[in-house]
Image (tube, one colour):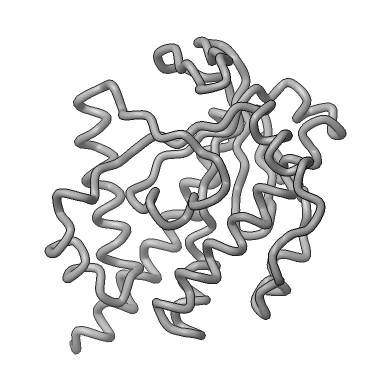
Length: 217
């Protein structure tokens, strides 16, 4: 089996695993929403207290929107336009999804109680630029190790140059928790009247589903 064929097989297995993860995720959340390239999992915060820069405190039991990238869409983009353009398009699509979420946090009853958006990623330097997310270290050592291992495996499998990227940037690729309070998010996206010029890929077919809720068992 060639290296390319092996990587394609691993990618297919990973996407199958994500289908299973999405199904299991419904049992640990109240609802799951799709905004373009993002999945928003509405759940109660279970970790330690988080103090945002605007003074908002996220306590255990508070409702948060946990962000997950739809790696199936990221993989399709990578295969279609290449890794570099896919990275730029993912950042643009992520921004569009966050804007859509900010517009609906006060208009959809099930999202009104969300106090902040959170996420954990290795690629926090590129994808969140200009959006306003704060970076918080992961307090638990075992969670740091778990997320680091999980996300590095993800990068190795989905990115065409994943092995090289990890090899060159091992020290920089440490998982971080991204947080933005609801108030900060609203202020950032309501003050600006004009957005940047849209990307040709902003019309990507999966972005047609704005605020699409998934069934929760």
